[in-house]
Image (cartoon, rainbow, N blue to C red; front, side, top):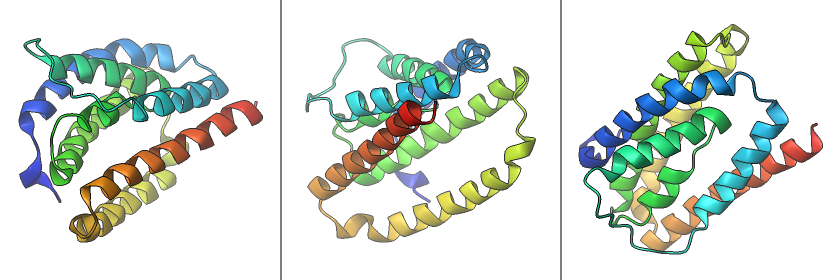
Length: 180
């Protein structure tokens, strides 16, 4: 829905790093306890999304390969990398570019993760209904988001983005601490 706004100079290198990271992290993931994963995700999300506002302009040749690797490695192990979310806010991209570039990068990474988990023995069959409903909800949410994205200020967009990620992180911390 936002494909014309994708910054491919970020998305393609990110996906290159993702392929490598998923191939390393997927075999590790299948052996981790659920409570550990939930707590780790929550901590990573809170730290990454509330990083201080720094301008991220690396001097290395392909920084997005590194971001793709680190984000995908953490995401494959803990189901949420958070690095791209935090770093992309500091790139100077506008909100449509942020949404589009993240969508392209994270969708590609999700395909790699699905394959990596399946190749390492994860059985998706008990979750087919939830997966289908999640896909429908994602498309509906994206459509609604596209309708309202230009009706809010840049500052409000960034604040709401941080708050939604924070609420998700706190929920995961709660699950990790109290569902063990």
